[in-house]
Amino acid sequence: MKIIVLHGGVSNKPELMGKVEEYAEIAIEKSEPLEAVVEAVRLMEDDPLFNAGTGSNIRIDGSIQMDAAVIVPGDFGAVINIEKVKNPVLVARDVMLKSPHMILAGDGAVKFARKMGYESYDPSTKKAMEKRDRILNRLKNGEIPEYYHPEFFKEFLGDTVGAVAFFDGKYAAAVSTGGTGLTLRGRVGDSPIPGAGIFAGEKGAMVATGIGEEIVRRMLSIRVYSKIGKGRIEDICRQEIESFGDIPTGIIAVANGKPCAISNLSMPHAIVLR
Ligand code: ASP
Image 1 (cartoon, protein in one colour):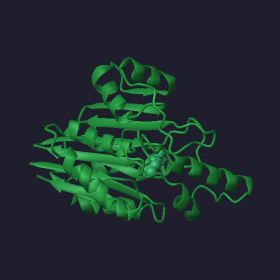
Image 2: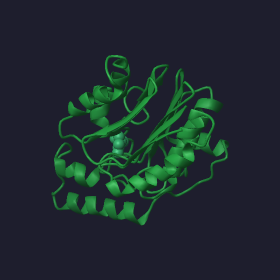
Image 3: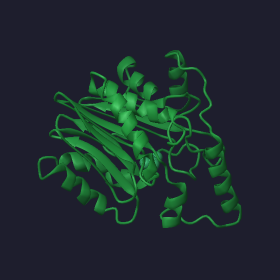
Image 4: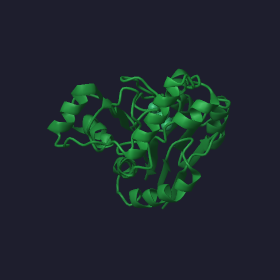
């Protein structure tokens, strides 16, 4: 039995559901769950409609720093604030499988990527540049709403991507993001933090999306994981997401062979079973 769940970011357009479904159908063809989640995330990184890889958000200083992670029960790999690579998720996978470390950050992550053969690549797009210009203009005009203001979420939230899979009893998850808009260089959200934006163990796998700071504060993924078995996974996720109130948050999970995708705002997603 194979299950894969993908998301294209909370607050992202519902019209992207078709794209996410298309990528889920491709990814489920892989034989291992780790390969499947990496492929799903790679496809979304290459699609500029999502805020990961090509099309990532641009920081206030003009740089693009991306975070990505992969996890299987008992192992983890992440890159934090990596720059000038096409597919951060592939580098995160290589950190897990080909380095003695679990997390590489900043220029060390970039150097590792080059050693692994990933060439220099500019992930910026016109759309991301325009978004940054809009933010800067509003900053100059003193119009930027505070971080937790609903206006902020509407305009500056991510469209991060993630995937969880359960193939023949084995779990895996992957995530990739350009971070929320309007961030300082060096900012790290929930995505590459195990237990916060991503987690997997013998009972299930999950990936979150939303305001990274709030997800880290609540350690959303490990909270959901620790409740597996105490009700339906869908109910557990719904209860956790409800606790965020109107702070846009979403989670995809698969636990005890049951998938779910829960959010409190539009979150294009796909659940495919084979
Ligand atoms: N959680 C991501 C972050 O804070 C953003 C997102 O999910 O869209 O970096």
